[in-house]
Image (cartoon, rainbow, N blue to C red; front, top):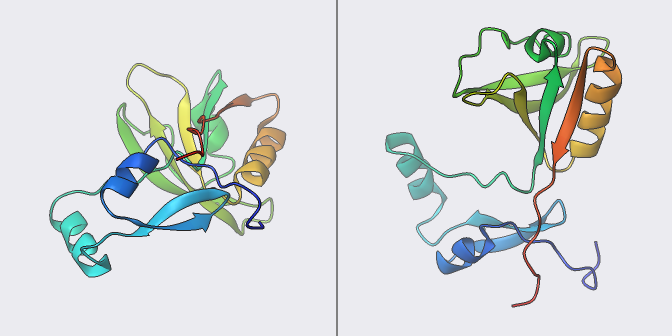
Length: 153
């Protein structure tokens, strides 16, 4: 990406700026890499209390179908069917040969039979294309695009 190309901003951009984040280009977005307290303090705070991770730049999709959880178990060595409502897990997306293609998060939102998937920003197009192709006929993906706020100050 050249300097002439504008970076997108997540819906939390203004909050990152307000909190003094150091912003860097990542996957076409201006993303926070560090806050004034420093990385160690951020880490300790998250371990002791909680942290917020802005996933709006990442690939987000719902997996629809008669049994999306069972379908997804063909692509990842995780217990999708046993995932309870309101819970999230970390998983590994496997290639047809059984090697690791990428990592991702998946959730079963309250009141939903579909699975909610969050994949890495840099690989979202390839990951979703692979999932859609591999699961064709059994399940389908509906990607969620997050609108970027205006890139003007």
